[in-house]
Length: 299
Image 1 (tube, rainbow, N blue to C red):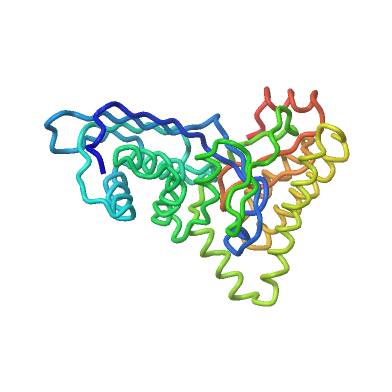
Image 2: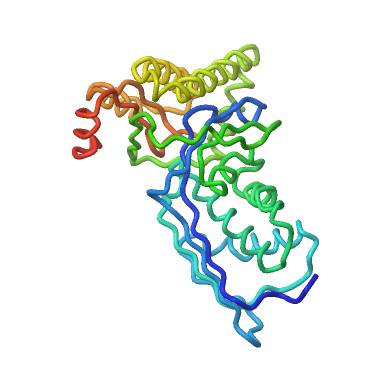
Protein backbone atom coordinates (compact mmCIF):
# COMPACT_ATOMS: atom_id res chain seq x y z
CA UNK A 1 0.00 0.00 0.00
CA UNK A 2 1.31 3.44 -0.91
CA UNK A 3 1.54 6.32 1.54
CA UNK A 4 -1.70 7.86 2.73
CA UNK A 5 -3.26 10.74 0.84
CA UNK A 6 -3.07 14.21 2.35
CA UNK A 7 -5.49 16.13 0.12
CA UNK A 8 -9.02 17.00 1.13
CA UNK A 9 -11.97 14.65 0.63
CA UNK A 10 -15.71 15.34 0.57
CA UNK A 11 -18.86 13.44 -0.31
CA UNK A 12 -22.58 14.20 -0.32
CA UNK A 13 -25.10 11.37 -0.41
CA UNK A 14 -28.91 11.44 -0.67
CA UNK A 15 -31.59 9.92 1.50
CA UNK A 16 -33.66 7.07 0.04
CA UNK A 17 -37.22 5.77 -0.04
CA UNK A 18 -38.63 2.35 -0.86
CA UNK A 19 -41.61 1.75 -3.10
CA UNK A 20 -42.07 -1.98 -2.42
CA UNK A 21 -40.23 -4.89 -0.89
CA UNK A 22 -39.41 -3.89 2.68
CA UNK A 23 -38.77 -6.79 5.06
CA UNK A 24 -39.36 -9.46 2.41
CA UNK A 25 -36.09 -8.36 0.79
CA UNK A 26 -34.35 -9.90 3.81
CA UNK A 27 -35.83 -13.25 2.75
CA UNK A 28 -34.70 -13.08 -0.86
CA UNK A 29 -37.51 -11.14 -2.52
CA UNK A 30 -36.99 -8.14 -4.82
CA UNK A 31 -37.51 -4.53 -3.78
CA UNK A 32 -37.64 -1.16 -5.56
CA UNK A 33 -35.89 1.82 -4.02
CA UNK A 34 -35.26 5.44 -5.06
CA UNK A 35 -32.77 8.09 -3.95
CA UNK A 36 -34.38 11.07 -2.22
CA UNK A 37 -32.03 14.07 -2.58
CA UNK A 38 -34.45 16.39 -0.76
CA UNK A 39 -32.55 15.17 2.32
CA UNK A 40 -28.84 14.42 2.34
CA UNK A 41 -25.70 13.77 4.39
CA UNK A 42 -22.37 15.43 3.70
CA UNK A 43 -18.94 14.43 4.99
CA UNK A 44 -15.73 16.41 4.58
CA UNK A 45 -12.25 15.42 5.69
CA UNK A 46 -8.93 17.23 5.86
CA UNK A 47 -5.55 15.74 6.67
CA UNK A 48 -3.58 17.76 9.22
CA UNK A 49 0.21 17.31 9.11
CA UNK A 50 1.66 15.98 12.37
CA UNK A 51 -1.81 15.50 13.86
CA UNK A 52 -2.13 12.43 16.09
CA UNK A 53 -5.90 12.53 16.57
CA UNK A 54 -9.08 12.69 14.52
CA UNK A 55 -11.20 15.69 15.39
CA UNK A 56 -14.83 15.08 14.49
CA UNK A 57 -17.60 17.60 14.15
CA UNK A 58 -20.76 15.58 13.63
CA UNK A 59 -24.46 16.27 13.79
CA UNK A 60 -25.85 13.74 14.49
CA UNK A 61 -24.02 10.39 14.98
CA UNK A 62 -21.15 11.77 17.07
CA UNK A 63 -20.89 8.64 19.20
CA UNK A 64 -20.82 6.17 16.29
CA UNK A 65 -18.15 7.68 14.04
CA UNK A 66 -14.99 6.30 15.64
CA UNK A 67 -16.52 2.83 16.07
CA UNK A 68 -17.55 2.74 12.40
CA UNK A 69 -14.10 3.81 11.21
CA UNK A 70 -12.49 1.12 13.37
CA UNK A 71 -14.92 -1.50 12.05
CA UNK A 72 -14.20 -0.44 8.46
CA UNK A 73 -10.44 -0.71 8.89
CA UNK A 74 -10.80 -4.13 10.50
CA UNK A 75 -12.98 -5.35 7.62
CA UNK A 76 -10.34 -4.14 5.15
CA UNK A 77 -7.60 -5.82 7.25
CA UNK A 78 -5.71 -2.53 7.48
CA UNK A 79 -3.91 -1.36 10.60
CA UNK A 80 -3.54 2.41 10.79
CA UNK A 81 -4.87 5.41 12.64
CA UNK A 82 -6.78 7.99 10.64
CA UNK A 83 -6.03 11.46 11.93
CA UNK A 84 -7.06 14.93 10.84
CA UNK A 85 -10.35 16.80 10.84
CA UNK A 86 -13.77 15.46 9.83
CA UNK A 87 -17.14 17.17 9.66
CA UNK A 88 -20.50 15.48 9.09
CA UNK A 89 -23.82 17.23 8.61
CA UNK A 90 -27.09 15.42 7.92
CA UNK A 91 -30.59 16.66 7.20
CA UNK A 92 -31.95 13.10 7.00
CA UNK A 93 -34.33 12.57 9.93
CA UNK A 94 -33.49 9.56 12.09
CA UNK A 95 -36.08 6.79 12.31
CA UNK A 96 -38.04 8.15 9.34
CA UNK A 97 -37.43 5.34 6.86
CA UNK A 98 -35.17 7.52 4.71
CA UNK A 99 -31.84 5.78 5.31
CA UNK A 100 -30.12 8.01 7.86
CA UNK A 101 -27.81 5.25 9.11
CA UNK A 102 -27.20 3.89 5.61
CA UNK A 103 -26.15 7.33 4.39
CA UNK A 104 -23.66 7.62 7.24
CA UNK A 105 -22.24 4.17 6.47
CA UNK A 106 -21.92 4.97 2.76
CA UNK A 107 -20.01 8.18 3.49
CA UNK A 108 -17.73 6.63 6.12
CA UNK A 109 -16.91 3.61 3.95
CA UNK A 110 -16.10 5.83 0.96
CA UNK A 111 -13.79 7.97 3.07
CA UNK A 112 -11.93 4.97 4.49
CA UNK A 113 -11.54 3.40 1.05
CA UNK A 114 -10.21 6.69 -0.32
CA UNK A 115 -7.88 7.25 2.62
CA UNK A 116 -6.41 3.74 2.46
CA UNK A 117 -6.40 3.55 -1.36
CA UNK A 118 -8.46 0.36 -1.20
CA UNK A 119 -10.46 -1.13 -4.08
CA UNK A 120 -13.50 1.04 -4.84
CA UNK A 121 -15.44 -2.13 -5.65
CA UNK A 122 -15.49 -2.76 -1.89
CA UNK A 123 -17.45 0.42 -1.22
CA UNK A 124 -20.98 -1.01 -1.08
CA UNK A 125 -20.03 -4.32 0.64
CA UNK A 126 -18.13 -2.34 3.28
CA UNK A 127 -21.02 0.09 3.80
CA UNK A 128 -23.38 -2.89 4.17
CA UNK A 129 -21.05 -4.37 6.80
CA UNK A 130 -21.09 -1.08 8.69
CA UNK A 131 -24.88 -0.87 8.56
CA UNK A 132 -25.10 -4.22 10.35
CA UNK A 133 -24.23 -2.20 13.46
CA UNK A 134 -27.58 -0.42 13.23
CA UNK A 135 -29.89 -3.12 11.83
CA UNK A 136 -28.43 -6.40 13.06
CA UNK A 137 -28.14 -7.71 9.49
CA UNK A 138 -28.42 -5.28 6.60
CA UNK A 139 -29.87 -6.39 3.26
CA UNK A 140 -27.61 -3.90 1.49
CA UNK A 141 -30.53 -2.27 -0.30
CA UNK A 142 -30.39 1.09 1.44
CA UNK A 143 -26.64 1.54 1.06
CA UNK A 144 -26.84 0.47 -2.59
CA UNK A 145 -29.48 3.00 -3.64
CA UNK A 146 -27.74 5.76 -1.69
CA UNK A 147 -24.29 4.95 -3.08
CA UNK A 148 -25.53 4.60 -6.67
CA UNK A 149 -27.91 7.58 -6.36
CA UNK A 150 -30.33 6.12 -8.90
CA UNK A 151 -33.50 4.00 -8.76
CA UNK A 152 -32.74 0.32 -8.31
CA UNK A 153 -34.32 -3.11 -8.31
CA UNK A 154 -32.66 -4.97 -5.44
CA UNK A 155 -32.40 -8.54 -4.22
CA UNK A 156 -29.95 -10.44 -2.04
CA UNK A 157 -29.13 -12.73 -4.97
CA UNK A 158 -28.59 -10.17 -7.73
CA UNK A 159 -27.87 -7.09 -5.60
CA UNK A 160 -28.61 -3.71 -7.20
CA UNK A 161 -29.78 -3.44 -10.79
CA UNK A 162 -30.51 0.07 -12.08
CA UNK A 163 -34.09 0.60 -13.18
CA UNK A 164 -34.53 2.02 -16.64
CA UNK A 165 -33.62 5.69 -16.46
CA UNK A 166 -36.65 7.97 -16.44
CA UNK A 167 -36.96 11.71 -16.65
CA UNK A 168 -40.65 11.46 -15.81
CA UNK A 169 -42.00 9.44 -12.89
CA UNK A 170 -45.50 9.02 -11.52
CA UNK A 171 -46.59 11.68 -9.03
CA UNK A 172 -45.13 10.34 -5.82
CA UNK A 173 -45.20 12.73 -2.84
CA UNK A 174 -43.65 11.96 0.54
CA UNK A 175 -45.25 13.14 3.80
CA UNK A 176 -43.77 13.05 7.26
CA UNK A 177 -46.07 11.15 9.63
CA UNK A 178 -44.40 12.82 12.59
CA UNK A 179 -43.82 9.37 14.09
CA UNK A 180 -40.47 7.58 14.28
CA UNK A 181 -39.67 3.88 14.22
CA UNK A 182 -36.35 2.07 14.54
CA UNK A 183 -35.52 -0.51 11.87
CA UNK A 184 -34.28 -3.12 14.34
CA UNK A 185 -37.51 -2.82 16.36
CA UNK A 186 -39.58 -3.25 13.19
CA UNK A 187 -37.58 -6.30 12.10
CA UNK A 188 -38.08 -7.85 15.53
CA UNK A 189 -41.81 -7.12 15.33
CA UNK A 190 -42.08 -8.91 11.98
CA UNK A 191 -40.12 -11.86 13.36
CA UNK A 192 -42.50 -12.07 16.31
CA UNK A 193 -45.46 -12.02 13.93
CA UNK A 194 -43.87 -14.84 11.94
CA UNK A 195 -43.38 -16.91 15.09
CA UNK A 196 -47.06 -16.48 15.88
CA UNK A 197 -48.17 -17.14 12.28
CA UNK A 198 -45.69 -19.65 10.80
CA UNK A 199 -48.08 -20.84 8.08
CA UNK A 200 -48.62 -17.33 6.70
CA UNK A 201 -44.99 -16.20 6.30
CA UNK A 202 -44.68 -17.16 2.65
CA UNK A 203 -48.14 -15.77 1.84
CA UNK A 204 -47.25 -12.19 2.70
CA UNK A 205 -43.71 -12.40 1.39
CA UNK A 206 -45.23 -13.48 -1.91
CA UNK A 207 -47.78 -10.66 -1.72
CA UNK A 208 -44.97 -8.14 -1.25
CA UNK A 209 -43.01 -9.79 -4.07
CA UNK A 210 -46.02 -9.57 -6.38
CA UNK A 211 -46.34 -5.89 -5.51
CA UNK A 212 -42.73 -5.34 -6.58
CA UNK A 213 -43.23 -7.16 -9.88
CA UNK A 214 -46.42 -5.22 -10.59
CA UNK A 215 -44.73 -1.92 -9.76
CA UNK A 216 -41.71 -2.75 -11.91
CA UNK A 217 -43.90 -3.33 -14.98
CA UNK A 218 -46.05 -0.28 -14.27
CA UNK A 219 -43.02 2.01 -13.99
CA UNK A 220 -41.71 0.78 -17.34
CA UNK A 221 -45.08 1.54 -18.97
CA UNK A 222 -45.75 4.91 -17.37
CA UNK A 223 -44.73 7.16 -20.27
CA UNK A 224 -46.69 5.18 -22.88
CA UNK A 225 -49.74 4.25 -20.83
CA UNK A 226 -49.92 6.56 -17.79
CA UNK A 227 -53.50 5.77 -16.74
CA UNK A 228 -52.99 2.01 -16.80
CA UNK A 229 -49.60 2.36 -15.14
CA UNK A 230 -51.06 4.50 -12.33
CA UNK A 231 -53.79 1.92 -11.71
CA UNK A 232 -51.25 -0.90 -11.51
CA UNK A 233 -48.97 1.15 -9.29
CA UNK A 234 -51.87 1.89 -6.96
CA UNK A 235 -52.56 -1.84 -6.73
CA UNK A 236 -48.90 -2.55 -5.98
CA UNK A 237 -48.72 0.13 -3.29
CA UNK A 238 -51.94 -1.10 -1.66
CA UNK A 239 -50.61 -4.67 -1.59
CA UNK A 240 -47.35 -3.56 -0.02
CA UNK A 241 -49.14 -1.42 2.57
CA UNK A 242 -51.40 -4.35 3.44
CA UNK A 243 -48.32 -6.38 4.34
CA UNK A 244 -47.22 -3.62 6.72
CA UNK A 245 -50.61 -3.68 8.38
CA UNK A 246 -50.69 -7.48 8.71
CA UNK A 247 -47.19 -7.45 10.21
CA UNK A 248 -48.32 -4.97 12.88
CA UNK A 249 -46.22 -2.04 11.65
CA UNK A 250 -49.07 0.51 11.36
CA UNK A 251 -50.62 2.06 14.47
CA UNK A 252 -54.20 3.32 14.64
CA UNK A 253 -52.93 6.90 14.46
CA UNK A 254 -50.96 6.09 11.32
CA UNK A 255 -54.05 4.45 9.85
CA UNK A 256 -55.94 7.71 10.37
CA UNK A 257 -53.24 9.54 8.42
CA UNK A 258 -53.46 6.99 5.62
CA UNK A 259 -57.22 7.45 5.35
CA UNK A 260 -56.81 11.24 5.35
CA UNK A 261 -54.44 11.05 2.38
CA UNK A 262 -56.84 8.80 0.52
CA UNK A 263 -59.72 11.13 1.39
CA UNK A 264 -57.77 14.02 -0.12
CA UNK A 265 -57.51 12.15 -3.42
CA UNK A 266 -54.38 10.01 -3.33
CA UNK A 267 -54.67 6.85 -5.44
CA UNK A 268 -52.68 4.80 -2.96
CA UNK A 269 -50.58 5.32 0.17
CA UNK A 270 -47.96 3.30 2.03
CA UNK A 271 -45.29 3.78 4.65
CA UNK A 272 -41.77 3.75 3.26
CA UNK A 273 -39.01 2.14 5.28
CA UNK A 274 -39.29 -0.34 8.10
CA UNK A 275 -42.60 0.83 9.59
CA UNK A 276 -44.06 2.18 12.86
CA UNK A 277 -43.59 5.74 11.59
CA UNK A 278 -41.48 7.74 9.21
CA UNK A 279 -42.74 8.98 5.86
CA UNK A 280 -45.76 8.14 3.76
CA UNK A 281 -45.42 7.86 0.01
CA UNK A 282 -48.61 8.84 -1.81
CA UNK A 283 -49.40 8.33 -5.49
CA UNK A 284 -51.50 11.19 -6.92
CA UNK A 285 -53.61 10.88 -10.07
CA UNK A 286 -53.52 14.26 -11.81
CA UNK A 287 -51.41 17.37 -12.17
CA UNK A 288 -54.06 19.62 -10.63
CA UNK A 289 -54.38 17.46 -7.54
CA UNK A 290 -50.63 16.98 -7.41
CA UNK A 291 -49.99 20.74 -7.38
CA UNK A 292 -52.71 21.20 -4.77
CA UNK A 293 -51.25 18.78 -2.27
CA UNK A 294 -47.73 20.06 -2.80
CA UNK A 295 -48.86 23.55 -1.82
CA UNK A 296 -51.16 22.39 0.98
CA UNK A 297 -49.42 19.85 3.25
CA UNK A 298 -51.90 17.44 4.80
CA UNK A 299 -50.18 16.81 8.13
